[in-house]
Amino acid sequence: MFILISAMCPCECEYLDKIEYWSDEANQLKQYNELSQRLAEIKRLLNVETKNLSSLINKKISAYDARLSARVTGYLGAAVLGLVFGLLVLLDLPVIIHKTRGLFRNIKRRSTAL
Image (cartoon, rainbow, N blue to C red):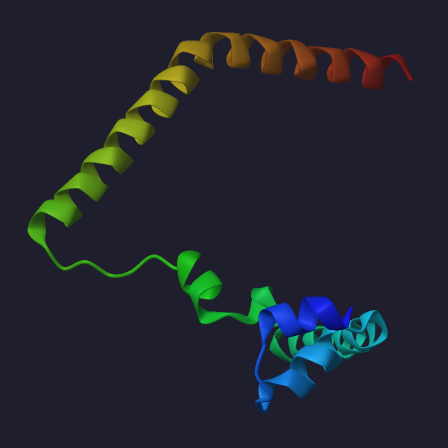
């Protein structure tokens, strides 16, 4: 082991002690465990509840837009949706009336039979 250390640092400098310290696997494992614990603690401290973030709350809120084009687009969209659903109800109106009359006839017939 000393041959490897002397090849990395052939002189007697201040880093020789550090190289010897880090070449020991027990010291490496001890340092790894300490750093893992510190990292876990830092992660726990930095963990943020995402449902309380303003970015998530603001994502669900529609912002007011005073431009004429935005208002016209909104009104036009509402009108198209209203027209489509209105036409669907209008097309089914004869069936709804027929079924409602039949229901009232059945109710009247059963109430008179009792």
